[in-house]
Image 1: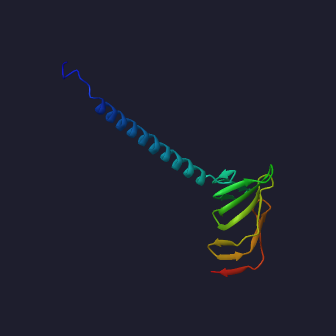
Image 2 (image 1 turned 90 degrees about the horizontal axis):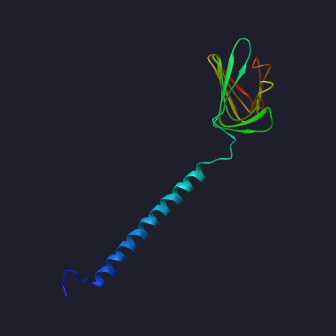
Image 3 (image 1 turned 45 degrees about the vertical axis):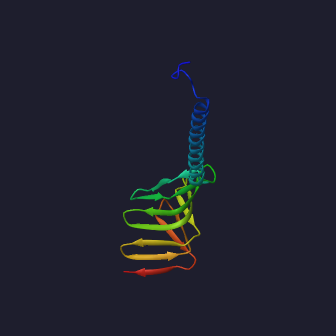
Length: 148
């Protein structure tokens, strides 16, 4: 019998076992990576309806731009803005954590700590109410005014 044609069975079984073992390692590695990607995606999802919402209050003389990190729809007209809520116009800015903004009436109200800043004054309060298309801002609760 020719020695080149003689196939060693132990070598073939060992070679097959190594190939199967490497194949299983690759499959488990891909599965672990897929699970990590799924977990990261689930962690990054939040309960917010809107991510980084942007609105504005318009009147004849100025615009007040509103931004936040998250927003949830309360009803057809009202949106609850959460985390890093900022009202900004050419004259002032207001920062707070939670605001209910009415898109139809162009009003906003907050019952959380708020800071109003302008070039002439700084006001910290326990809440505020913006109405009359941004022409009137009423501050609630313990309020501190610093005039410059």
